[in-house]
Image (cartoon, rainbow, N blue to C red):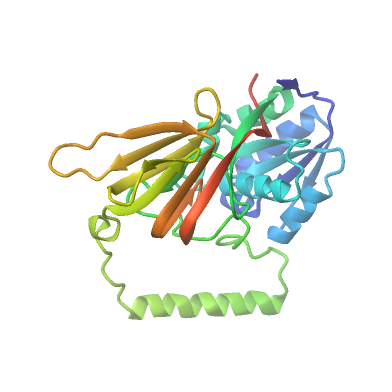
Length: 304
């Protein structure tokens, strides 16, 4: 581990969704960070400003105040710019709604604003493994095909990739009056349409996400082929001895099916069109996708 000097200058990038959702937690975190280090605070109104702030960080150590999607966006940007190796990220998790901080919690980031800010100041950089797919997308925590919860939409119903839509309620606090009026008009129309039009009945999970047939290859060998229907596949970086942990749950016919497990550095899934949930983002449909483990590819400041 590399010790983090408290004298480092910090670039504190506050996600607009966090700013609107829990302004008090944001204020507390900002106060703790400012009391312990020289800080420059950025308040981006959208994805372009968020990216621009990180790109122009200079020698400052970047600290993201936001939820899992904000962290994923930061890692994705630095990966695309091939700057992950020389830039340790810090996170103060702030989010509203169930599941928006599940990745942060799994990575070991403290959940309270004060505890997380103190970890930024006093913690240590830990190098973590990364899954990179053949479209240059990244996975920090876990990947599900289909997701174990039998639904592939995100916690907020979104299906965008990390570099895509910014998310609800983040269109910019400084928008011009015309844009604000247009947004209000659109919201009014959308509300009216939702009121007048009855929503179609939700398809039962068992019907929409029943057994599927996929070929799963690990380090060049076939773990399961198309002749075996599957209920779920999960891939998680950070397997024992390196690599990623793969779990394949065959569809049970009568007796309970035996879970198939493996540890590998390269995983290829192919077959009929499928969607997959990586961290907080749903992608697809695709017919084939390959993920490769990058050992110690990114750094996150965590309690010592």
